[in-house]
Length: 170
Image 1 (cartoon, rainbow, N blue to C red):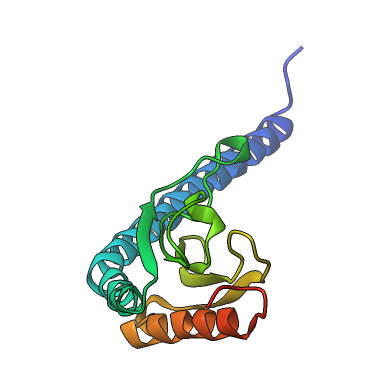
Image 2: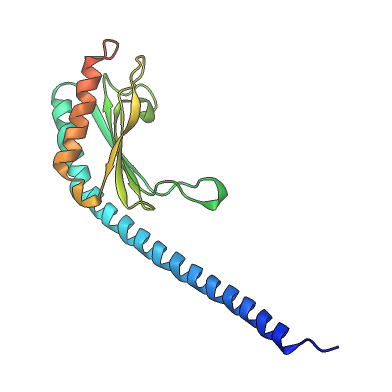
């Protein structure tokens, strides 16, 4: 028994639509990944030419006052489901009394690239070895808004909050 031409035509339309949807989804994914890659490259440039020098200036100042500092960077880190976390980051850790613990246990400021939303995000921590504090997001801005002045203002805020905490070292 042969299938009716109308049924055959409707099946062709259904499968043609499916093929079109797949092709459009693939094109959208390629375009999104291209934009994300361009953002990451721009962030990497800003990390080396804007963020690192701004953090190092503050670091050298606190070093002159008897503290230490370390600047660290990290690339993509794997997450569940084959996805990656926020892509790249740079972090200034303020070593309040020499380095005696793991680096992530010191107060500081992290600057992270969120490639999905095309934003630069800041995370501040005043928690350190042998003292409490706070750790929280301190906002996200566009890459163009992430200037050296803003970065230094963010670190200044961390230091101000650190000194206002009675349990943290002075």
